[in-house]
Length: 206
Figure 1 (cartoon, helix red, strand yellow):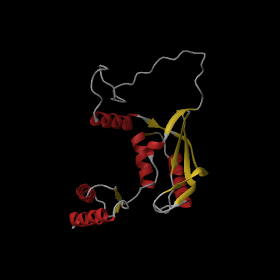
Figure 2: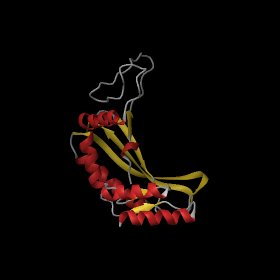
Figure 3: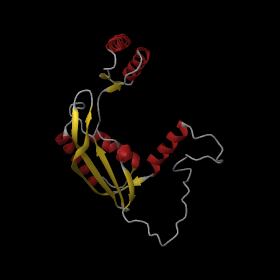
Figure 4: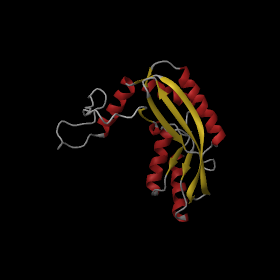
């Protein structure tokens, strides 16, 4: 329901243009994403994962304020999907302020005809998460996200996009091994192909 990656923190006070600013160099212990030579190959996925893991363990947060509010906005143009047509969004936004002055905003998109929750349900869970953050003391980023995960467990199903029958079967088997008991399959482009995908998926899970 909520995406932790959508929260971005920035200083409350703007930088004063009258003073020159030095470029900041990331330390390897925080983010191991740069290479020694600019001509080297880009960082691998494992290096990126290691850098994020270090960040989860080394970056600490202390929440001073956390609140949520509805976001009801009409669309400039209607947005049509397979099951409905959208003329407005009724989402939820969360604002978090740390004691060091950083502020972050995150948005939870609400599609009650696609997902399980509607705006009132999302508002209630967002409020619960905000109240939890206000009661927690100084903690690492990883601990904070773990606490949020307990309040917002997310969906209990995995989605399979419109892919070939072989790819669908492989994904179904993979998600079953990961513990998912419900799979959501995207269909609608070709009836014959959709039926074949469903057949191979069922065979892969039997």
